[in-house]
Image (cartoon, rainbow, N blue to C red; front, top):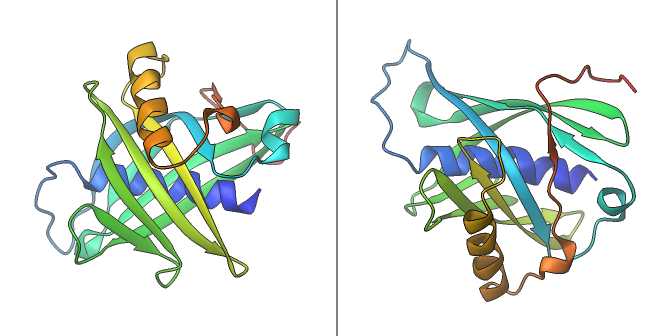
Length: 178
């Protein structure tokens, strides 16, 4: 489950950095607004996601000094909420971002559907490579055209739609609450 939490957090930061962003001074922080995680899939099924309900709150994103991004949101699985906060660094390769000393890498794919992005992550988790893909958008509603595009892109990258999870959107979730 930690792999999933890491992928949610880091992937969103990468997709937001791919947009044309305003220049940020050393003392400034810019609020990039609210984004919604709409779907996630991985090369391996994550049993916790299939057994229990999964929910997410809207994600808040800020630009930090040096162009790093900080994202914050709450993930709920089986009635337990966890606050997530991560920072991603831009790499030298355009559209690629890293975290945790380069052990997590995200690549961005713009969806053919407006205001949607697909990002593909590869993480080293305890010596095992884990690949995931996430669909995010500006609107909390599921867009069937964006979901179909997501399935096509992930299939082309060798991920199965059988592991697809569509989290429930929630406005709030108290960490540790049932």
